Image 1 (spheres, rainbow, N blue to C red):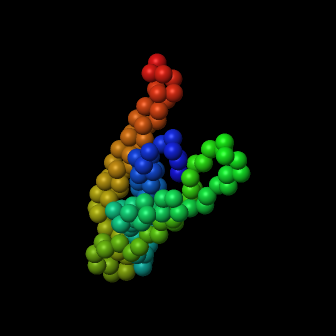
Image 2: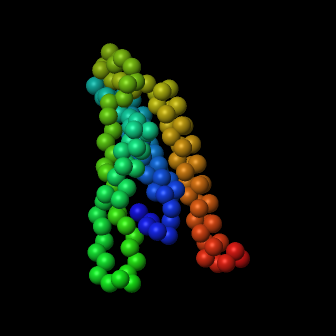
Image 3: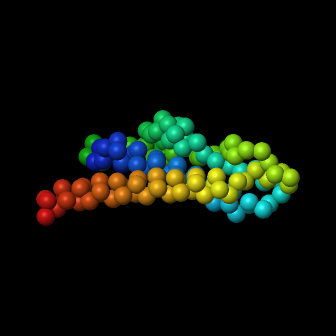
Length: 136
C-alpha cells in the first residue's frame, strides 16, 4: 500500500492488523451469540488468512500515472476476510457451538497480536518521522 517510501514491513504490519481486526469481530460475535440457539461459532485462521492477504499485496487497484514526475504508491486494496465455522467442539443441546472459555483465550491472543503490531507500526512511523526531521 505504501509504495517505495515504506518497506515490506509496513505491508506485513498493515495486513496483520487487518486480519486481527477481522478475527476480533468474529470472536466478539461468537461471545455475543453464546446463548443463541443454533448459532455456529466462527473463526479466522490467522496464519492462513495472513498468507492469503500477503499474496494479494500488489494485486489491488493501481493508480494511473499520467506524468513521469508523479509518485506511484503501488496497488491499493485487499481481499475480504471471510470467517469460517470454528472447530470449537460439539454443539450443546440447543445446537450452539460457542465455548466461552475458548473464545476468551482466542480474544486474548488476538488482542496481544494486534497490540504488538500496532506498537511496531508506531515505531516504524516514529523512525520515519525522525528521518524526515533530520534526527531532531
